Image (spheres, rainbow, N blue to C red):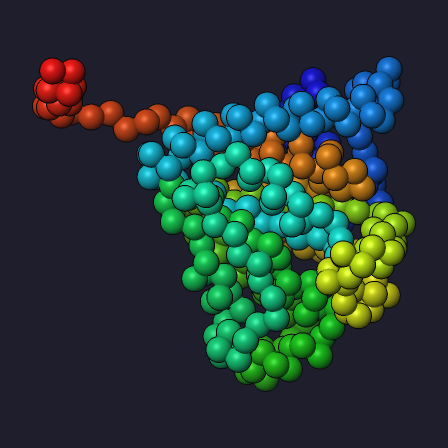
Length: 301
């Protein structure tokens, strides 16, 4: 795939804006056909997989330097509607990364202990250390997405009555922006990906799971029920993009109807983000170089 990073930025990175972001303006089934008009689907898929393989090799090398330099960390936030491919993206994009330098957290329903703290508390505990890549499979954005669609969940958060005002959601966006700005200023690169899947594709994937007994464990009643709130979720996501895509923590709206496209784009963006840090393997002192030379001589003898 001959797409440059500038192409990807123009197509999928959400710029900081006060204007409304419309998901309908982003093609969930995008597959670079405008760039490769002569290629059919199978050829496009093969090219994307080759592009992914190339980026995975580069990502592995970049991660090694990230680990060795021990100055920066990378936080990847994945958000999506059910069945959009978050787990598969993690599996394929991080397949070539050293497991010692990567950690994945999948956040479920908050516990009673979580609810006795601020909504950011449980995520702060899971942040990646310097030199590591951390992945949040769902994140603190659930508190301006799921909680916004199902406002009855706010009652469980034990907030002071005075917290609820007309600027409640705006205040949460501000909390998130300040939190991410704090991370960025202290060496954590924040990348946020929304895997953008069409409603028709979700239906197709749900039916595939229901028709395959080996995949029944992936389905829950909540999956179907949440589908009924599709429009409300899209409105909430659009508000999130508008208020929280910043220079220091941008959102990327990644087309996900074709899983191979989503994986290739995420891998490319993550790899480039580490490479842009321009990290170097730590140099050792001259004295240490002499000690290593002596050790090498002893081993040769």
